Length: 579
Image (tube, rainbow, N blue to C red; front, side):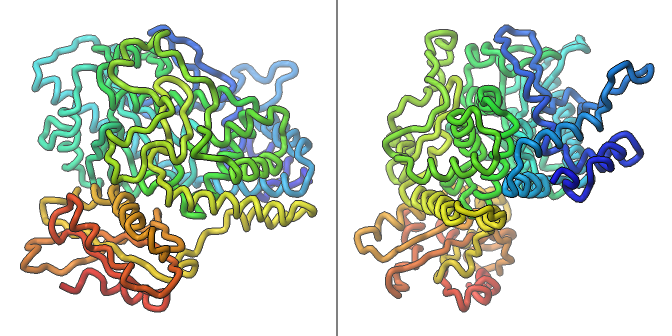
């Protein structure tokens, strides 16, 4: 059982680590084991100026790397090489997990999260390019505001890669979530201005950047775009200091306590909560493996999208950590996956919020921030978001650890929750079916991709058409599709005609639209698809244009067609070319 992993035996692994193929061997295993030694180091400092000991990627004008340490004067007595250490870790892990299921799962997860060197280089190139762009932009802002700083040791900004990088769940298909940490003299308007003094305007001139869009809500401000084919979310985060220390620690409570910008507090808290999730887990290596597997499951089953009202990386991380905390002695990945589905298939989401720790007493260190941001308190806020959105934060509550606590599943409504629960029950049923035998194939079946083109009998195709100077309009509408669909289902709920509906989160078609007299100069069209199963063949219910007319959309900018399973491809091919 121990002789092979990812096609390499233990002897070859050691040889490759110490020989010329060391990089290749490292790539084979780094996403399985490298997270564990790094995660053992935690940051408990709350005072300003002390550095975080975690090894997340932080860029201070260059991309930092962490080379493997080597003895400089030959191996000391008792020295174990890095390759041998890695091999011992592998062997120890496999000894702990003797079942075929655990052995198979380890290999499956490692292979799914393998990243080739070319993709790593592309991601690093995106970060280094952004660093240069942000650096020049800040110089322009300072010149425009008459700010002069002669202290070369002061840092103007930090780019902190968060999300999957912190959680250890980065894969070849992962987006780049980058927190852009800025001093107090850089404000929101500097970030989104469309001229040379705005980061948005600066990025608009970059040749290798596509589809830039400003996402501005009451909770977040970010620029989303593609660079070198990689999706990037660049998130605004201002700190309440004039400069950023070289040993800046994101876990320093002062950056929350004295911050006057709500969006920045929430952005910083988002990264802080991920570090908290990792640190409070009793078995961090097992947690990472569980998070990786359930992320594969959620993406494959098309319920991984916060914008669409499904699960997110944050919510899956909290769900995974809860299972590990409740099973502190567990070492088996197959056991912990079974627990995940068995627990959450029966969870009463509307009655019981999912929390890892008790709520923080804001009066102990966060009194000032409490005036700016409201932590989760167990009550909905539909008055603030609008009752027609279908979610008030109570349908499903998965709460972040650390102030200010937030509900990571706020966007879930009663219909998207139904879809999530169906998939949780499916997972539990599959596991139960194979519970009396050592069947490794169950782990592939559980994360088998949902073939939505055959799973649903009917489809609603939604097209967004924008004018020449409204390239961000359709991106903004994409966020609202969840709301339109909720209103459509709610209006028809009394007729009991809709058995299931499913906004396909990983489908966004770029359609070539013909110009028309109503839309002179059209340059961009986007299409989204909703899978639907009906209780009867009442096609009239699939016509949802009236929902668009009663919304705040531009007239005739959104319209829809319905298709059946048999004519879906033909409808997609012609949709948008008929005026």
